[in-house]
Structures are given as structure tokens and as C-alpha cells.
Image (cartoon, rainbow, N blue to C red; front, top):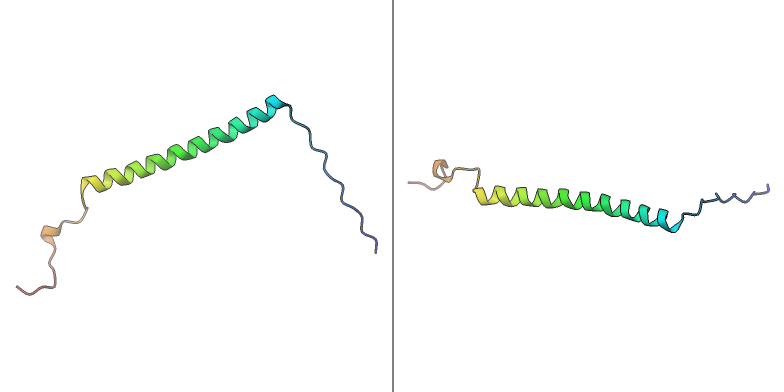
Length: 65
């Protein structure tokens, strides 16, 4: 059994401008993800600053009166 060497795919060489555009596109996608993370963190902070959702005044604990 003779193994054949796999042909390497010929990649089209990008021009410097195409390389720059590709990297800028990556950066833009990363920035979009970053904005989503910052918004989520701000929502968490806002929820915490508003106070707890649980009303401790209505809580009946296990301590005997």
C-alpha cells in the first residue's frame, strides 16, 4: 500500500491592504463582543445598586419569638 502525499492547497496571497482590512474586521468583531460584555456588567451593577429583590421585612426566620 503506497501512501500519496496530500496536495497542499494553494492559498491566495493577500495584498497588504487586504491583510489590513482582514485584521480591522477582526478588531471590529472583538469590539462588538467587548461592548456586549460591558453592557452586561453594567446591568449587573445597576441591579445590585437597586437593592435586593427579596423583602427581608416579610421574612419569617426560624428564631423563636
